[in-house]
Structures are given as C-alpha cells and as structure tokens.
Image (tube, rainbow, N blue to C red; front, side, top):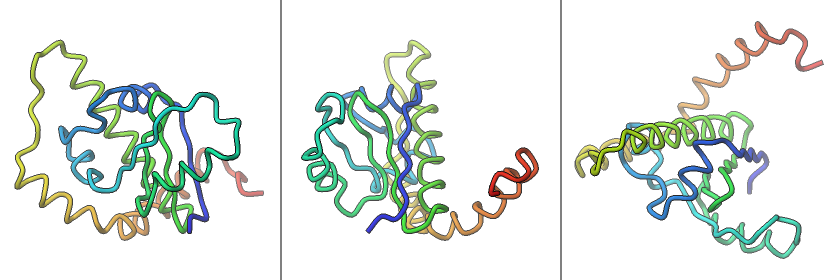
Length: 149
C-alpha cells in the first residue's frame, strides 16, 4: 500500500504521456524504469471518485505511472521511494522529449541485452532511494533552512 504519492504536470512528463509508445528505452534512466511504469488512460479532469479504483487497478504493483495526456505519478512506502521514483521518471521523460526533438527519423534504442541488465539493476530502486534521500534532504536544508518547521 502506498503511503506517499507524488503527482506532477511537467512538460517532459506530459509530453511522454501523450506519446502512443509511452516511455521508450532510449536512456539509462528509461531502461532502469521500463518494467516499473504503468499507464492510465485520460478520462478528463479527475473529479470523479470512481476513477480512483480504475487508477489503482491500472497501477497494480508498479510504483510509477504515466497518466495519458496528463502527467506523471509515483508512489512509495516512504517519501524517499516516491521521490526517487518521480525523479528518475521525470529525467527519463525529459531525455526522451529532448532526443525526439532533434528532428531525426529514428531514435537509437538501447540494445536488448543492455535493457535487461539495466532493468535488473533497477530493481534496487529502494536501495538507490536510501542513498539519495539523505543527500536530497541536506540540499533542501541548505537551500531552504527550516523547511521542516
């Protein structure tokens, strides 16, 4: 069960959520997340409570979601897990938008073997969040002292 949820409407996140292919394995970040991203179709403004059940069903056991034509979502048992998930998802989306904006007909996908290896390494996202979260909090304290008051 998710205890923390982060939902964003960034240019990169909405851009990828609006692409039929979704998140492509064109960057290391995308390969890390490939098996962790669920998709939820756009139903208009999320004003109806009954959409919650469909969203939860679409999320399944995955911690990340692209909300079609809408944005990104990350869930976690801890704030650190949700934060690191949305951080990497947003990076992957921004990288995809940048790669596709070059006007090239074809974008180089990561080789299958590299995708598999990176996917296996990405299963430790909880481990990564345990390392990255304390640093993020230190940076926040430097930039916004007393944020937690």
